[in-house]
Image (cartoon, rainbow, N blue to C red; front, side, top):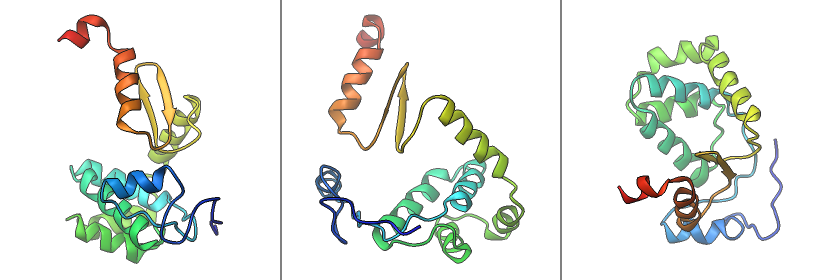
Length: 154
């Protein structure tokens, strides 16, 4: 789906405050020209989790999406990311083609919707749910609010 620019976005920079936060962290986050069908990449993430390489795979996926605007539904893109993340493409490819992880991903989606999650990223800390890229201070306030005095002390 074509992704129209939002107010304050340019081809090389996301709108504020996300643009400044990304820049401050040394991240390149360009406005994608389209929103890809992410089911294949979500399914590939499940395989990566099984073999203990989900952080590497997810990190590489986000890097190439935000820096290069790649299509995360394209099998050749996923093959490249998988190989860069040291995943066995010969195992992963048939699983993607067969929908091996589809129900697992859909169940995660249903659970998120049941919790009231309507955007990403989403965070559930204790019983507090919030979404969007948030500064460190927001996480600290939420955690301080959730922890009991005993937990905070120790």
